[in-house]
Amino acid sequence: MKHLVLPLLFVGLLWPAGAANLVRAEGTADTMGSSFSVVAWGEDGGRLQSAVAAALDEARRLDAMLSNYRETSEWSRVNRLAASEPVLVSDELFQLLAACSEYSRASEGTFDITVGPLMKVWGFYRGTGHFPHRAEIRGALGHVGYQKVVLDPKARTVRFTEDGVELDPGGIGKGYAVDRMIAVLKESGVKSALVSAGSSSIYALGTPPNERGWKVAIKDPRDATRSAATVTLTDESISTSGNYEKFFVAEGKTWSHIMDPRTGYPAMGTLSVSVIAPETIDSEAWAKPYFIQGREWTARNKHKDFRVFFCEDKAESPCAWLQ
Image (cartoon, rainbow, N blue to C red; front, side, top):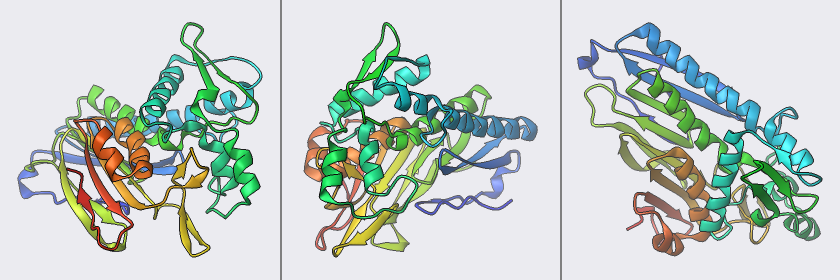
């Protein structure tokens, strides 16, 4: 079997000879606008492969619920109707939207799923990006703001306070899916696995055979052929937001898809941020606010259980762990 290759977060997997009593199963699925990969170890090959398939099916299920590209998804239904009436949603989606609201408050608005109109005018929705007119930015910015999404926990409904609001799952969907896939694997008895979503959000379950953990190398945003750091993960996640993922160059600057919802412009000053956290939904959700707010704000506000690796856009400032 070929080894798993992850282009943004390089994963080094060296399988020792001492793993003779264990078998390895793997699988991939293209869904949620990304490539999901699972590598797992166990004693029963048939059960292990079934668990991997079930985990990938879970990612497909969530795409059917969360995709803003599928007209039939629950997420798209909210975007279509919530400006005109309260929309009854599933308990799962309501809880996810409630979590997004909390991330927005805690990050001072730098995590915001209402960023959809900005992603469209900057060309990052189904495209590679382009520089919009300032009037377009102002118009889109007028429809952005997590306070424009009203959640009613008793009725389990979602309502927008005005027309033009549009939710974008890009900052949360993959991380949530990875955690759900890990839950499926655990329910199947899997104790050793690596799940990756687009290689930018990863969860390491247990350890591979005869190793202390799963080795993950963080890409150097200045040089795609090098890694900036290597970490060993056990029962924890890592997510990276980098300006090299989706970007274009205009007016002598690199404009990335990491949008500052407060200004309407892509965030500047940071090249990449990697967050290690107990759950992938947290590592993915917080990577963008840390990217936007910068090192000093992050140092004051990061969760005590998180580890954060910064690469700033300063010639004299190398990539380094936040102390």
